[in-house]
Length: 82
Image 1 (cartoon, rainbow, N blue to C red):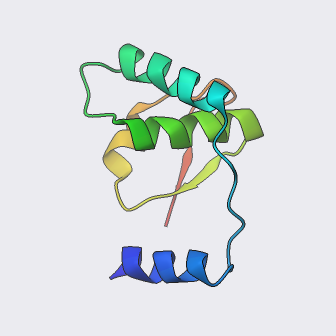
Image 2 (cartoon, one colour):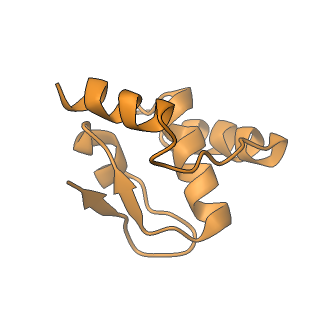
């Protein structure tokens, strides 16, 4: 399964982990309010907030549904991977 392979890759340091900041959680709460009529949860909202802070456009996700709805502050849309 792709998620399991990703988790193993993170565990073996194939990816750099970015810390979650308090400002990310505050922005996530704002996003959850803005998109209250969607199933955008805390984890996805925190990913969006961190991506906004870091000005990242590409988001690796197995759930394209949530990220395709969100309009980040720094771009018109995310580039969803794979």
